[in-house]
Image 1 (cartoon, one colour):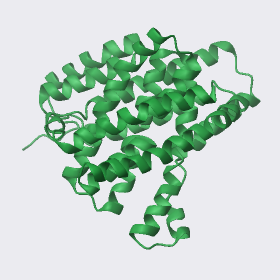
Image 2 (cartoon, rainbow, N blue to C red):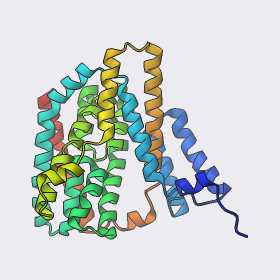
Image 3 (cartoon, rainbow, N blue to C red):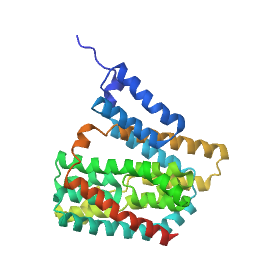
Image 4 (cartoon, rainbow, N blue to C red):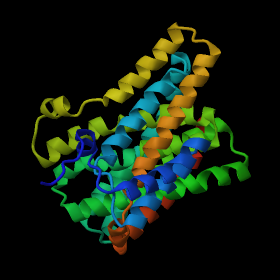
Length: 326
């Protein structure tokens, strides 16, 4: 009779024996010890590439839970007044960035004769919030699995480049914490990589990045409404019921409001910061597990080139907008 796996093992979709467990632990422990998101991302990617597969089918759900928890806890270290001031300071920059990226992306994709579906997904991911925007908008374009994999894979690799490349360059240029946090919020795709990239540079940068990035993420709501009306002929009210503000955004705002009303002791604030960073490291480790050999194989060709080109074209605009805002 075949031995059944434990319920918790089945719930997370783990596949592998003790050797795989040992490998995964060895890969994540250095990241937790140094509380460094980049090491967590590299450790997860090392595991999946070495094994030739993702040993944890539930890694995306785990990454989402850890990231959202990290952002909400980070809100407990902030002040609602500072949150409002930061949002007001960079709201114009976010608006210009998102709209410019949407227009430029669709125009460049057409000139390069990129597949319409893949090009649209990459444009939306670059403009708003990476994999989240791609996954949310894919049904409107009836994107199949190969196109979805190309778009998500390109975003993933560009996130890795930003995480490892942006902080050293910023140190060399002597960029301020606020400027780097805002730049990361605009120039990096996924929320997890935005906060992680900024956290490598400093705590203040991470707080600024989280705040500005959440404002950018909110653009997903009107975009989904427009896509629903354009692609499916739905009424705006019908789409609005489905295009809700993410709960973790509301949780972050509520946590910041609580921190404003309650004067937490200094050691509590340090504890919140530590917990938030550990959860962020775990989130990046789970994200790293999603990088597989198959993902790398799919990224050759015109679509991959388009993703890199659009990102490089938007980077100077992000830097200019941050400079003008500060």
